[in-house]
Length: 411
Image (cartoon, rainbow, N blue to C red):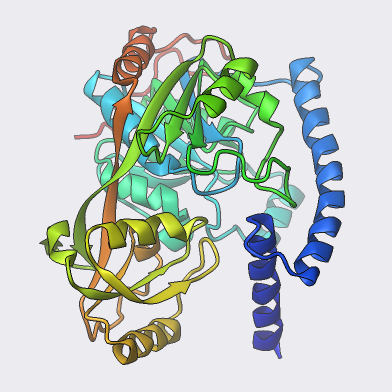
């Protein structure tokens, strides 16, 4: 019974995603879209009211006394935020900053409700942030940490990664326990509780604002006009071709802002749970099964095809779907019947595949990195500008007189 209900809910969610991205246009989709449009009006009222309250300082932001950089977007999913956060963290680390990444840990395993009630009842201290990486080693898996924090922790040795819904609390923890002088808020453009210094806004150039409507009818988290808060705008997933209309729209709402254009560049294929790396040229002529659970699977599949592979099977799951072993076994059988030689997925999906799964055919994930194709000087200027600011400003009461850099010093 429970499994049947879950499948129906997943089917409804999948149908809703298709309506939001305008992939369906039948009568049922139009009716559901009309209902979602009504909800969007309510969502807009909530978003604009919240923004107004913070702007008027009715609701106040915390000053943590150190450098705070926000990386985020106006839309849900698919802008390629994680590689940008990784690139920014590497550059700041190379400039001598002590970097901590703060994430809310979307789709991570939550603290049991009875734990929260017990702490409230006993007046116990709030649960500390989850330490995904202490800078020396990765301490949590993707199920506990969330996909993106786990990926960042795995790819960024020397950088602390914490998750907590209350990122102000996580920021204080990073300063006190790890001596962080630079905090990067992953997916923090809508997080107003922490006073920031720089806002890096990512816009997917291939699909900037969807149908222009707010959730749940569109993909916008807040009105397009709110890009006026951005210090820098990153145009991601660029094909290198000019888009005068998009640039004019950005300039209208944020005159003079720096535009940094970048593309997601595939680097290699990495064997799942193994050390083997394969050059992308070896995809040429291969029959592959491509599966993913990301917001915009089309971009991943396009990468696979552009290197000459023939996709004989495509399987798309809901964003952040955690694969079960029986699903992977079914996927393998479908791939075998379709004549696939390899299974290919994304790096983000690879962390959600059961680790003990026996692989009857080669399984690889596509490693993708950010490559700046326009505005590289502006990116370097932004990194230098951030790096030149004082490490610790100490404006927040309650912070220790000196960050405890030696308490848990990273090697």
